[in-house]
Image (tube, rainbow, N blue to C red; front, side, top):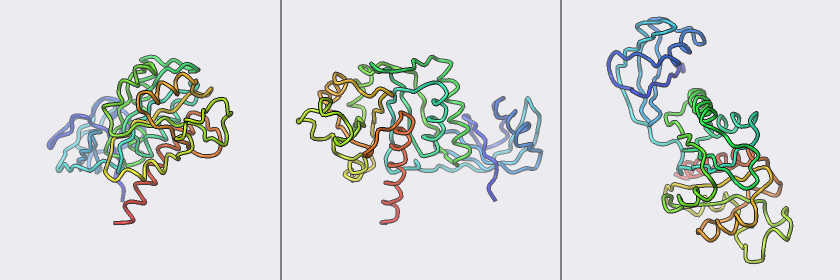
Length: 259
């Protein structure tokens, strides 16, 4: 039987009050009562088995008996540097990428961005990620960072083991948008993942609906970023982000089955 999962960033053994939002969720949505078993997670890989001892809309307390550390869900830790699409699609991107095991999401502002999120958007995304972690049974909460410019995101290259900018394949983009020197345009993202023999931190850029500008591609290549394709069709921003995370999840499954 799968027990209800609740987010508690200050997880520890003993009697523990839940954060107000989680307490409200436990009572109004899950309708938990004293004696019910629950699982708490802190978003950093720690999970605790506990029992509800006090139940109220403003205060719910849990007796945590044991805590265990779970490894990160995927072989690779993927950070998405993504130019967020229109507002009504943003939450969907956060939710599905969280379910698939993304490690972090770094919103960026690109030349052709259609949206420039603010701090209020980030707060909503973080809450959406928590809910997705509960649903997916994840112990690791992805870091949802504040938006930065594309130029600033390139300054993070050296902080990762591998970096990649996803881009339409040679077959689908206009010839004028990919020079003959762009030999990596035809490399698939899946093959890039497969080439990494050790668990790696990977920063992946996903462009806006209008695509990357030529200047941005050149800047990325000059910074040592690889170019890779997600397939023969042109994807929406949220679809491309989900495809990146799905490829990483599938790569993990393939490696696990080989053991």
